[in-house]
Amino acid sequence: MITRYDFIICGGGLSGLMLARGIIRDKSLINKTILIVEREDKNTNDRTWCFWENKGFEDWDLVHKTWQKGFYISKNFKKSIDFSSNSYSYKMIRSIDFYASYKAEIISNPNVQWLKSKVESINQDTDRAEVVTQSGTFWSQVVFSSIVTPEVLHRAQNHPYLLQHFLGWYVETTNKCFDSKSMVLMDFSVDQGENTRFMYVLPLSESKALVEYTLFSKSWLPQKEYTKAIDSYLKNLNSGSYKIIETEKNAIPMTTYPFYKNNRKRIIHIGMAGGWAKPSSGFTFYRSIKFIDEILLCLKSNSLPSNKMVKSRFLFYDRMLLKVLEKNNRLGRVIFDDLFRNNSPIIVLKFLSQETTFFQELKILSSFSNKMKWLFFRALFR
Figure 1 (cartoon, helix red, strand yellow):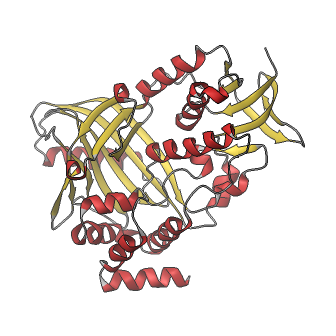
Figure 2 (cartoon, one colour):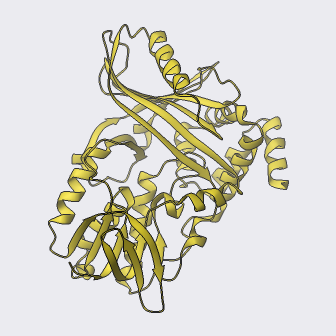
Figure 3 (cartoon, helix red, strand yellow):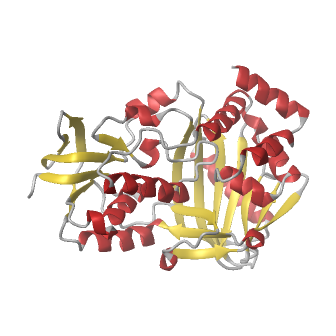
């Protein structure tokens, strides 16, 4: 096996595969050699990615389902979301489809080597980077790593930090209890306890859906709490009996920790390890497309990507939100209620996607109740 490559990508998940495909499809990078190191086969549906956009996502064959309408639901009100009003749509991609499509194209390229192995360390010296794996040592001009280490997560907890953790069931019900044309972005009508808790529902038909019980809090609940909540929710929808087809379970760090500070001249962190997950929502897929585009522009000009790729003012908003939820975790529903009750849902979605203007953001911030404004002010002071 070759031991020296132009690029080494550690991790064959979302960001790693997006980057590898971007390189082999670019005419100015077409002769670059790539090594992808991944310890798993990536042949299961381990997660579902969703995003809203209006700019013509190109991989339509990977889109499992699209919705033009949705709902935000809370204890005392329900807000309709018409994505089509601004030519938006809400798209769902299953990871098993993404992995199969991207991996097949990438490994068919003669300049790409896929190595199933565990990365043990990543180092650099003056003119190269080194990746030590269980299968050998390899070198490259630059290494892109999506591996999140326990040490980094520990450091992140010294910053505003929560987990977005969830259990999701793909269910098939005996009764037709879902509206197949409308997804549920957040349903805060469920019992909150002392946390921020909501249901996320992606109907595939009138009797099939992905139902996720999601929390923003500092730690996981016992497994039975998730299953009990989803079962109760389905019963309230009059689902009748149901069959669990697949399950998903995951946790996304919600933090404004500056992941870019772990980058070095020849070691660039991508994906969650690069802080690409939106701190206040966890959305990663569409953000990754934008970050990959920035990296490719740098590589084509023979430069290395900038350490910091996230706009500072949005990190500022995220930091305020996480500070409030760290101290008053049960207030999540109140915050999102103010957002969706007092603003256009499409503007809220643009805000969460970091696509609003500064003046739109001022209007959103002014729409919060006086109590919430005071809590944000105290968070800002801290």
